[in-house]
Length: 358
Image (tube, rainbow, N blue to C red; front, side, top):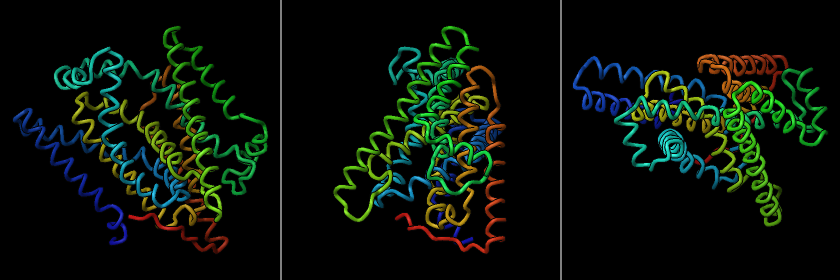
């Protein structure tokens, strides 16, 4: 218990602060005990929903973070959480409204507080573009993990080995995602199809651009440091993780409007989830969990592929966030079970990874 508290104490304190702010806001805005308790309950449900959708995010963050330079590890865990909490959970919805409605950020904030129904309508109306961008980026993240000719460990053996064999075909995963984007766009109205295609292509370009920047920085640092290559270190890795976290948060931000259209309530609930992603990431890296459970990464990346696919198809079909979270949890749970079973059969000892500096 003490070990767990070491990683989650700050998140628990942050959660208590957010719940306190929810009570204060509820009472200040309604002066009703019942309404205040209702607001608190919505914040709690949003927090649970965001945490349940965030475990695969934490696993993938840890996969990249464990190979980064310690300085940039600390920057991601400090600056990065500020971007995740204030950028994606607060600034992002406001920016959508400002751009979609052609108004300034101050007017967007005013709209969110005084006309929450209109604010919700504008944000929800941007879902097609968000689904295209986020779905394309996440699909590429998941597929790139499996389309790797050097990958030696396979969880779903027959499927993953078959995918690995096709990895020698240049940009095969890019072509696959493009086909899916085009296929979904044919089911949309002409206006939505144009938005979806544009957003999807921008998602692919962003993925390529971030990886290109990371490769350039890796080459530069490899020349400077004779003692081995640093993978996804420095600014490239930081940007990659920030875009990845943003893509993960899209569905949570949009799905939150199913429970409330109040920006303050949504921000409080989702921010708790963002903070727990940080704690889970540190926990996974410092305890060497990814090395101990060999298939855990596979489960997380399969969950990412599922999430990316759901986001893409959600441009046409409504898919409840509970299904997304459940599928991700099942895949990660199965990969964890298979990892434990493998360790028992092989008598495998966990391999500790270098700690992330607090």
